[in-house]
Image (cartoon, rainbow, N blue to C red; front, side, top):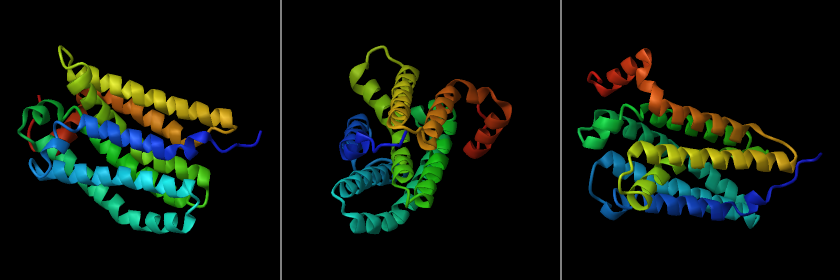
Length: 238
């Protein structure tokens, strides 16, 4: 069976727009409604993540319009934005582990694996997209994978703020958001299978999402990891 081009990719701009809208809704109370105020790390990361989603919308639109030369030019320029994304992600890891706010103190160590692995996976997916830039199928999938780990943080906050604000816990919103993201990854894998070939990017993404979800419950019970997080936080953790 020969692999067919999936309709997902012709509609990719729409899906990236939906991801951006989810981020706008989820982070509106804590970020977008307070632009220019708050901790610099969060302001910087929010701006870079927003620009990255806009980049993906633009790049997928350029591919849809067959503007390949402009797509390649923007792709080369994206190296700078990708580097800034990594820097901002590491700043968020540091801010979450060392912050004195209630959320950072309570959830920062528990989310450390999620944050660190997300930055690492972003680097991996982006580099693989560059390596496979001449293979449209793999390139598109790896670039999509740079965005999809942004969904759970945005969706969990949207759920917590607007869908189930009364009586809901952060853990409930966290796990529901990861369930939704994992189901999307499964749907993408099934879409590949129906098109004739299951490729690695979405399988790797699904494994990452499952590990991140499990880490919320078990990471701080793993002695060496807890010691590392305590070292990064600069304080002993309960």
